[in-house]
Image (tube, rainbow, N blue to C red):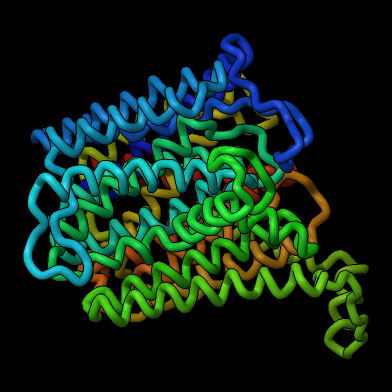
Length: 539
């Protein structure tokens, strides 16, 4: 459970810090102003990276064993933070940016011994006089690759989340606890930030965030491949960081071919090319998520293959992607906006239900009833309620009462926090939930109904209280795929199943809290009843 705590601490600290740093952005001038190469059209604060770095550092300091390597990584994070804030405020010259990156990298390489000593196609280990400069070059390159890929709302954060997730999984399989903990802390900070960054973004991570993610990914992937699991091919990091590296190499190559400065801005990145083909913002981001997911999937299933085969696969996939863009550009091809309208019996039925309002009304009733039910039932039928849990229930009841006195009609931030914590308690109590044989099958069916009701209501509702973004698809996909990967070893403690149910509860609760007054009252009833039952049973 230590890794989950690392994730939660980082997530909470990041989310708590985001509102104050957004207010601070205007005072220090850390505002992203649109220009010719940027997609957004309004000035947006670019201080999200500050909250991300702070959340990750707080989680690691609290939970990690602070050996020399971990301390060097934390110091590197701090250096990236200082230079990043400076850059976001003043738009530093690229030479000063490199100086900050170089300082952070040299610290982890020389002090933390984060060094690439095993190189593809070379037997044995490289001597330090070659390995250290090579590692410094690689880490600075990866840091800038993520920085350069930060061009659409949710893009750099989402692709980094995919990469950091596979790093955590591979390290977990190889018993690399330190890498898992740091990766989970960084993942928590990304999710805490992304809810504010999906299109249309209200907050950017800035150079602080993008350089922090690039630095984190580079350091962790080197430790994973060189120390934690040295049996894997040294080419696997290429796949884990697949699309950002491909994008950076392609853009730099084109600039060199056109005899332009390597640091001159342009619109030749993959996300720019997807937009030029006629995809909208959501579609471009979602497609890049899929491409990056394909790379990390190859990394997972082919980590012990030969260097020759892996290099051929990476080069082949990369050339295929670039060739498709080149052909589309040469032929002036664009995605057609014309949609074929087809009125089948199913479409007619859906339109009838939509006109009648049943596609919103029925899911709303199901969500409003099932969520309180799934909060109360585990509290009643769990085998044992510990004293600690009972004390927590009493504390939450007091907080909830105070919150209701202050603000009765709408959900306050304090009350929302209580609702989310009770959701976590309900999922946790399912571990010892056994009123009768087959009860868990019934609970699983109810969770499935909850997912369907949520999806239908979001699809056909016209309200603006909850909007699905590419981030949501990414999170749900990760929660479903990761527990089912072969040899993931997560099923032993039911962590995977708990994570899926927790994500379902979080999203459905968030949706219901934005609905009508009756739905809010039902949620409150479920929360209060679950807390009372837990308190009574625990004492």
